[in-house]
Length: 307
Image (tube, helix red, strand yellow):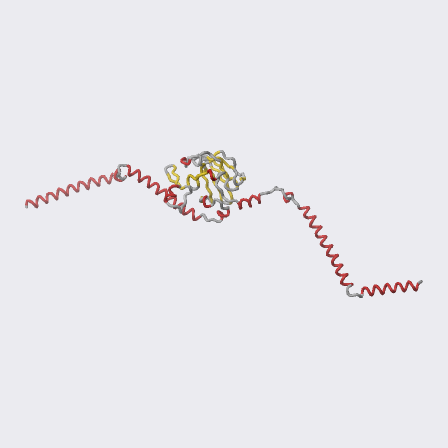
């Protein structure tokens, strides 16, 4: 019995030794061990990440939630284009255009507003309904209401800021439906059209302006263009040119009015109608001197004849 057990053991030992002597055994063991260890490490890392995500997951990150939509508003504003401040552009008409420095003389003259005996270049567009009735005034672009002001001359004002230094103004309005600090969306009704003292001839209308750094720009140049178009624009040179041309236009207009008045006054100039006191004395002296000269000439002539 013992002999058989010893033989069996020795045969098993020989089998083990022969198995481990094979070339592929140890590499296989190493690879299998490495695979097991790597699998364990990856499982541990994934398990930790899942727990971290669950602990830091906020309600605002869930699909369909709009707890904080401010970034979305900013993106939408960047994609919006300036539009006319009316619901239906086909029902509107521009009664007075923006004073364009590059326009011809006739266009510039038509864009002058006469108020308080002074000509002012129109710094926006005066928009009215074709039927002359009042209409809803809408926000040209999304933004924040920064000013709501009652003004008899301008006909009340609503100002909306769209970016730092870039605003739209809505003058000659009434029944405004917004207040300072309100966030408004493009196309939202903010007021009704009204009248103003500075441009009574326009009747019921809205005076619309686009400004960058408080410099008015021609709205026609930015309609259907994004906010970025105005952000990239350089309005400093336009302001200097506008101030110079505005001064020329006002002076020229006033000269025309004064010239017409002077011509109507019996075709005489102010200097002839209202001579100065010194000037009158000088005329009398010249007249007396002329008479004396004539007398002397007559005397000399008589003397010559007698001779």
